[in-house]
Amino acid sequence: IGHSCRIDDEPRINDRIRAREVRLIGPDGDQLGIKPLPEALATARSLDLDLVEVAAEANPPVCR
Image 1 (cartoon, one colour):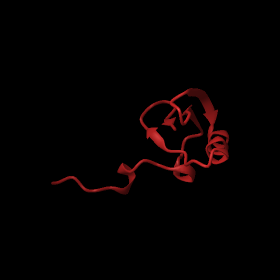
Image 2 (cartoon, rainbow, N blue to C red; image 1 turned 45 degrees about the vertical axis):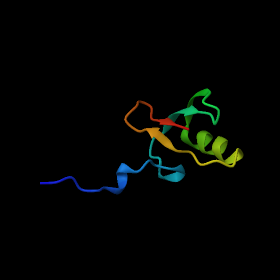
Image 3 (cartoon, rainbow, N blue to C red; image 1 turned 135 degrees about the horizontal axis):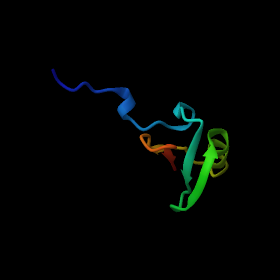
């Protein structure tokens, strides 16, 4: 029995993030607080950036 390569080992990005709310880290590493996912996505898009889930196991997940 070996390890299989699963696609969900990849970080989730933008609309693939499943959490209702996330702890948002800004592009400069600033803590922006816990935000509803739509607000976090809007913030990222307004900066022309992708929202990336960097700690999916955290509660709430951490995104930057």
